[in-house]
Length: 143
Image (tube, rainbow, N blue to C red; front, side, top):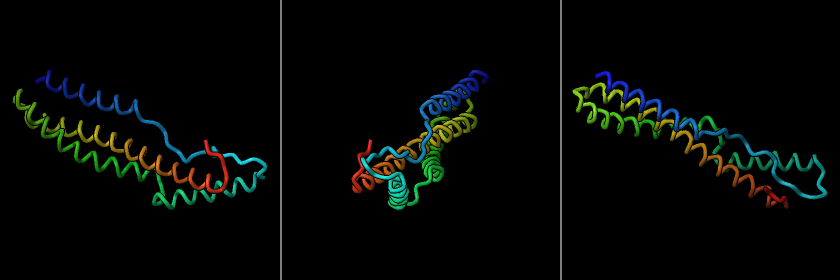
């Protein structure tokens, strides 16, 4: 029985460790655009307008909302799958209930972290593309 709980603790720790190692911070793109002989005031105005354009095109991109949406969706699915697998493997040691609990927690945590990361990457990529399109249409070279 102790061996089973040690394995569950190791599985939970592994999921958190591996997922957290792949997380990164997402913010709005810095001005990575350049157009020669353009006053700073005009560049700032274009930058602000293009950020607004990108935000509108992505449904008001909010990193926190994107992360929460992905975490809930994948967390629930992975939690259910983890609970089922945990119950199956736990039954080998006569601990189906504990296995389901541990598997569900591991699946929920891992799926939630994975879902948050995936949705953040998807929304950030979409936002950045829309921002770049807007800046290029105004004659800027975008890095």
